[in-house]
Length: 96
Image (cartoon, rainbow, N blue to C red; front, side, top):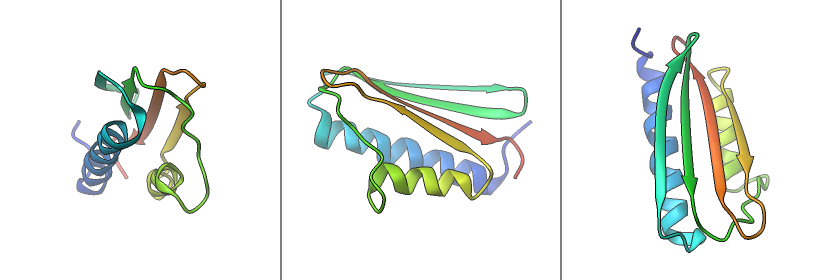
């Protein structure tokens, strides 16, 4: 089943912004993007081997992404310990 146009647009913009963040802020030499659909949920995961320390700060990039995915009943998790790696996982309903 294909996601709705709204979910596809959110997924595209999230991955694009996350990769931009990797390039601008992480100091990473490598990033990966994984995409899967399971149980009616589109799972996106972006990981990098950078310095870590990313945070969800209200009014800033990652928190804005979390707000965006919630508009379609999605979710975002962040793991970014000091020293890395950083992993952002997003779940979006296949239909919204």
